[in-house]
Image (cartoon, rainbow over all chains, first blue to last red; front, side, top):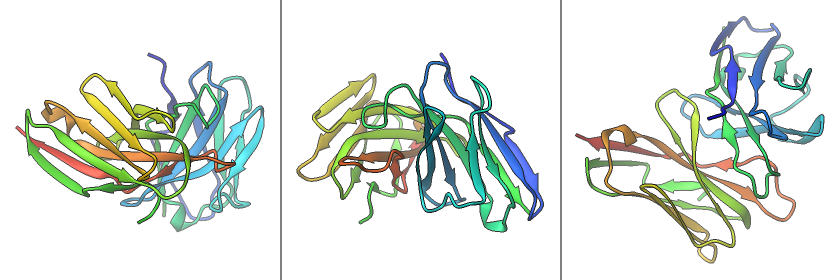
Length: 115
Length: 113
Protein backbone atom coordinates (compact mmCIF):
# COMPACT_ATOMS: atom_id res chain seq x y z
CA UNK A 1 0.00 0.00 0.00
CA UNK A 2 1.46 3.41 -0.96
CA UNK A 3 2.56 5.59 1.92
CA UNK A 4 4.12 8.94 2.63
CA UNK A 5 7.81 8.73 3.45
CA UNK A 6 9.99 11.26 5.23
CA UNK A 7 13.72 11.71 5.68
CA UNK A 8 15.60 11.94 7.89
CA UNK A 9 13.78 10.29 10.78
CA UNK A 10 15.78 12.37 13.24
CA UNK A 11 17.72 15.58 12.67
CA UNK A 12 19.85 17.35 15.25
CA UNK A 13 20.97 20.87 14.43
CA UNK A 14 22.42 23.87 16.16
CA UNK A 15 20.45 27.02 16.70
CA UNK A 16 20.73 29.35 13.73
CA UNK A 17 21.42 26.60 11.21
CA UNK A 18 19.28 25.86 8.20
CA UNK A 19 17.52 22.52 7.92
CA UNK A 20 15.64 20.88 5.08
CA UNK A 21 13.12 18.19 5.85
CA UNK A 22 12.16 15.94 2.98
CA UNK A 23 8.97 14.14 2.12
CA UNK A 24 7.81 11.92 -0.70
CA UNK A 25 4.03 12.10 -0.87
CA UNK A 26 1.86 9.32 -2.26
CA UNK A 27 2.39 9.37 -6.00
CA UNK A 28 -1.09 10.22 -7.30
CA UNK A 29 -1.83 12.77 -4.59
CA UNK A 30 -2.21 16.43 -5.48
CA UNK A 31 -2.39 18.21 -2.13
CA UNK A 32 0.50 18.37 0.28
CA UNK A 33 0.80 19.56 3.86
CA UNK A 34 3.26 20.08 6.68
CA UNK A 35 2.30 19.84 10.33
CA UNK A 36 4.31 19.88 13.50
CA UNK A 37 3.85 18.43 16.96
CA UNK A 38 5.81 19.86 19.83
CA UNK A 39 6.39 17.22 22.49
CA UNK A 40 3.26 16.72 24.56
CA UNK A 41 1.20 19.16 22.52
CA UNK A 42 -1.35 19.03 19.71
CA UNK A 43 -0.53 18.45 16.09
CA UNK A 44 -0.54 21.88 14.41
CA UNK A 45 -1.05 22.77 10.77
CA UNK A 46 1.77 24.71 9.12
CA UNK A 47 1.10 24.92 5.40
CA UNK A 48 -0.75 23.41 2.47
CA UNK A 49 0.53 23.24 -1.09
CA UNK A 50 -1.32 22.64 -4.33
CA UNK A 51 -0.53 23.17 -8.00
CA UNK A 52 3.03 24.21 -7.18
CA UNK A 53 2.15 26.98 -4.82
CA UNK A 54 1.22 27.56 -1.23
CA UNK A 55 -2.51 27.23 -0.80
CA UNK A 56 -2.70 28.26 2.81
CA UNK A 57 -0.41 28.82 5.75
CA UNK A 58 -0.91 29.18 9.47
CA UNK A 59 0.42 31.87 11.78
CA UNK A 60 3.25 29.54 12.72
CA UNK A 61 4.53 29.49 9.14
CA UNK A 62 6.50 32.73 9.23
CA UNK A 63 9.30 33.99 6.99
CA UNK A 64 11.81 31.50 8.32
CA UNK A 65 9.83 28.65 6.77
CA UNK A 66 9.54 27.80 3.10
CA UNK A 67 8.27 24.86 1.10
CA UNK A 68 9.18 23.56 -2.29
CA UNK A 69 8.34 20.77 -4.69
CA UNK A 70 11.66 20.63 -6.53
CA UNK A 71 10.69 17.72 -8.75
CA UNK A 72 7.76 15.43 -9.41
CA UNK A 73 8.14 13.43 -6.24
CA UNK A 74 9.75 15.37 -3.38
CA UNK A 75 8.17 17.97 -1.13
CA UNK A 76 10.47 19.85 1.23
CA UNK A 77 10.19 22.09 4.27
CA UNK A 78 13.07 24.46 4.90
CA UNK A 79 13.66 26.25 8.16
CA UNK A 80 16.12 29.02 7.42
CA UNK A 81 17.50 29.82 10.87
CA UNK A 82 16.41 27.34 13.48
CA UNK A 83 15.42 28.32 17.00
CA UNK A 84 15.20 26.19 20.11
CA UNK A 85 11.41 26.36 19.92
CA UNK A 86 11.45 24.75 16.48
CA UNK A 87 12.26 21.44 18.17
CA UNK A 88 9.31 19.23 17.32
CA UNK A 89 8.14 16.31 15.25
CA UNK A 90 7.39 17.48 11.72
CA UNK A 91 4.84 15.53 9.71
CA UNK A 92 4.26 15.66 6.01
CA UNK A 93 0.84 14.65 4.69
CA UNK A 94 -0.79 14.30 1.32
CA UNK A 95 -4.28 13.84 -0.06
CA UNK A 96 -5.64 12.89 -3.44
CA UNK A 97 -8.72 15.05 -3.21
CA UNK A 98 -9.09 18.58 -1.96
CA UNK A 99 -9.17 19.21 1.81
CA UNK A 100 -12.95 19.46 1.93
CA UNK A 101 -13.39 15.82 1.10
CA UNK A 102 -10.04 14.09 1.05
CA UNK A 103 -8.35 11.93 3.64
CA UNK A 104 -4.96 13.24 4.63
CA UNK A 105 -2.31 10.56 4.94
CA UNK A 106 0.64 11.29 7.16
CA UNK A 107 4.25 10.24 7.00
CA UNK A 108 6.16 8.83 9.97
CA UNK A 109 7.62 12.22 10.83
CA UNK A 110 11.03 13.82 11.28
CA UNK A 111 12.04 14.56 14.83
CA UNK A 112 13.93 17.86 14.78
CA UNK A 113 16.09 18.69 17.78
CA UNK A 114 17.59 22.16 17.92
CA UNK A 115 20.42 22.57 20.43
CA UNK B 1 -13.52 23.42 24.95
CA UNK B 2 -11.25 23.86 21.97
CA UNK B 3 -11.85 22.61 18.43
CA UNK B 4 -11.34 18.87 18.34
CA UNK B 5 -11.32 18.03 22.04
CA UNK B 6 -11.27 14.33 22.85
CA UNK B 7 -12.81 12.79 25.91
CA UNK B 8 -11.66 11.04 27.99
CA UNK B 9 -8.01 12.06 28.05
CA UNK B 10 -7.05 8.55 29.09
CA UNK B 11 -8.86 5.23 29.02
CA UNK B 12 -7.74 1.85 30.31
CA UNK B 13 -9.79 -1.28 29.56
CA UNK B 14 -9.37 -5.04 29.43
CA UNK B 15 -8.61 -6.80 26.18
CA UNK B 16 -11.81 -7.86 24.48
CA UNK B 17 -13.86 -4.96 25.82
CA UNK B 18 -15.14 -2.13 23.67
CA UNK B 19 -13.52 1.30 23.83
CA UNK B 20 -15.43 4.50 23.16
CA UNK B 21 -13.79 7.86 22.66
CA UNK B 22 -15.58 11.14 22.09
CA UNK B 23 -14.66 14.30 20.27
CA UNK B 24 -16.27 17.71 20.39
CA UNK B 25 -15.65 20.64 18.11
CA UNK B 26 -16.86 24.21 17.76
CA UNK B 27 -17.13 25.25 14.13
CA UNK B 28 -18.96 23.93 11.09
CA UNK B 29 -16.96 21.25 9.36
CA UNK B 30 -16.60 19.53 5.99
CA UNK B 31 -15.30 16.35 7.50
CA UNK B 32 -13.90 14.78 10.64
CA UNK B 33 -11.06 12.28 10.59
CA UNK B 34 -9.78 9.93 13.28
CA UNK B 35 -6.12 9.04 13.59
CA UNK B 36 -4.07 6.69 15.74
CA UNK B 37 -0.58 7.45 16.98
CA UNK B 38 1.68 4.96 18.69
CA UNK B 39 4.14 6.50 21.09
CA UNK B 40 6.57 8.76 19.25
CA UNK B 41 5.44 7.55 15.86
CA UNK B 42 3.48 8.86 12.90
CA UNK B 43 -0.26 9.37 12.54
CA UNK B 44 -2.18 6.51 11.02
CA UNK B 45 -5.40 7.46 9.27
CA UNK B 46 -8.33 5.42 10.54
CA UNK B 47 -11.50 6.82 9.07
CA UNK B 48 -13.06 9.95 7.58
CA UNK B 49 -16.68 10.88 8.05
CA UNK B 50 -18.25 13.68 6.04
CA UNK B 51 -20.56 16.28 7.50
CA UNK B 52 -23.57 14.76 5.72
CA UNK B 53 -22.88 11.29 7.13
CA UNK B 54 -24.06 10.08 10.52
CA UNK B 55 -22.27 6.78 10.91
CA UNK B 56 -19.45 4.90 9.29
CA UNK B 57 -17.84 1.51 9.83
CA UNK B 58 -14.42 0.14 9.05
CA UNK B 59 -13.57 -3.29 10.41
CA UNK B 60 -13.76 -3.07 14.21
CA UNK B 61 -14.18 0.71 14.09
CA UNK B 62 -17.46 2.54 14.20
CA UNK B 63 -17.61 6.33 13.97
CA UNK B 64 -20.64 8.49 14.54
CA UNK B 65 -21.10 12.16 13.83
CA UNK B 66 -23.75 14.47 15.28
CA UNK B 67 -23.37 17.85 13.64
CA UNK B 68 -26.18 19.34 15.73
CA UNK B 69 -24.16 18.62 18.87
CA UNK B 70 -20.81 19.13 17.13
CA UNK B 71 -19.56 15.81 18.39
CA UNK B 72 -18.23 12.51 17.15
CA UNK B 73 -17.47 9.19 18.74
CA UNK B 74 -15.06 6.41 17.86
CA UNK B 75 -15.92 2.91 19.00
CA UNK B 76 -13.35 0.14 18.85
CA UNK B 77 -14.99 -3.23 19.37
CA UNK B 78 -13.30 -6.34 20.76
CA UNK B 79 -10.17 -4.42 21.70
CA UNK B 80 -6.70 -5.95 21.37
CA UNK B 81 -3.40 -5.14 23.06
CA UNK B 82 -2.19 -3.73 19.72
CA UNK B 83 -4.90 -1.07 19.90
CA UNK B 84 -2.94 0.62 22.70
CA UNK B 85 -2.18 4.07 21.29
CA UNK B 86 -3.32 7.67 21.33
CA UNK B 87 -6.38 8.48 19.24
CA UNK B 88 -7.03 11.90 17.76
CA UNK B 89 -9.93 13.48 16.01
CA UNK B 90 -9.18 16.14 13.43
CA UNK B 91 -11.62 18.47 11.74
CA UNK B 92 -11.58 20.37 8.51
CA UNK B 93 -13.59 23.54 8.92
CA UNK B 94 -16.12 24.46 6.29
CA UNK B 95 -17.02 27.83 4.75
CA UNK B 96 -13.60 28.73 3.48
CA UNK B 97 -11.87 27.33 6.50
CA UNK B 98 -8.27 26.27 6.64
CA UNK B 99 -6.99 23.50 4.41
CA UNK B 100 -5.23 22.08 7.37
CA UNK B 101 -6.84 19.83 9.93
CA UNK B 102 -7.36 20.98 13.50
CA UNK B 103 -6.39 18.27 15.94
CA UNK B 104 -7.45 17.63 19.49
CA UNK B 105 -5.17 16.60 22.33
CA UNK B 106 -6.11 12.96 21.96
CA UNK B 107 -7.29 10.08 24.08
CA UNK B 108 -4.60 7.76 25.34
CA UNK B 109 -6.01 4.24 25.20
CA UNK B 110 -4.41 1.40 27.12
CA UNK B 111 -5.59 -2.16 26.54
CA UNK B 112 -4.71 -4.43 29.44
CA UNK B 113 -3.95 -8.01 28.33
